[in-house]
Image 1 (tube, rainbow, N blue to C red):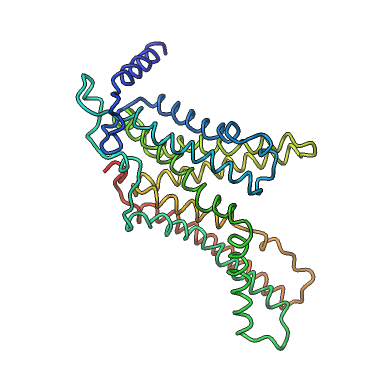
Image 2: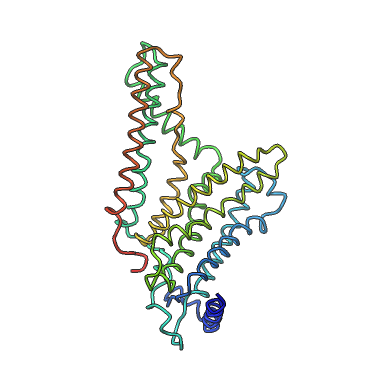
Length: 357
């Protein structure tokens, strides 16, 4: 309504008016302001928009036409992300931190270091909880990968094969092949996927976007839950990944239906991951721990279910029985991993919101 909008505008203007030039000292000490929920959503939307737009503004058009895996484009996009992330971190205390006495003193929290508020800390006990937790979710994929390799080995082996040869082939197939795939071809792409992108995205979409919601007037007064914040804030993270869809739709031979369905699935996946990463940050208070999970999930990717759709018509009776048994074991492994993942939410994470401590 008009009254609440007016209150929001005057409240925002009043706080920004009182921000002193010495806010740069807020990196050492920050008295975080309590903006309302609407302002936090607006800030999240603006920050994510700048993050995406700079990929097009700072990157030359000639470079944008190159393949996503092209080294030149990767370097330019990393340059854009570095600039955006650096300026965003510098800009944050100018908006949300206050230093010194003011006539609106009651609207600010106790003094904390900005690094602590944004989660730039490492407590190994808490920081390693998310990576342990998400590894359990991938238990089904680990088991299915081993079973799939074992099955392929069984149907291709001959009498001269030994257990030692199987182990050697297993290590080469699963570990060395993946190592070469990620670290032996395009090292810039590897750095982007497993190091720089997780760091930049978690700093922007978790470190800088989640704290304002936790310090918002609605959350502090108990009118909004942590679950709502973890489900609302990551929507901008999901939407930010859709700019690739617009580029694909411009291609002459594109299948619009497939691209749109793929975009919707990506929106769902990235939003769910964003919600989980937000929860991990709040509960552990460690942004490095969340970055580690992001990098791990990029490495693992989405679970592969192709093994369950493998046809058995060309195999003998004994081999078909083996395949059915492997499929059953793999399916139960996925169920077990997902069940344990859900069950451990309330068991291994701290009950308190560590980011606020």
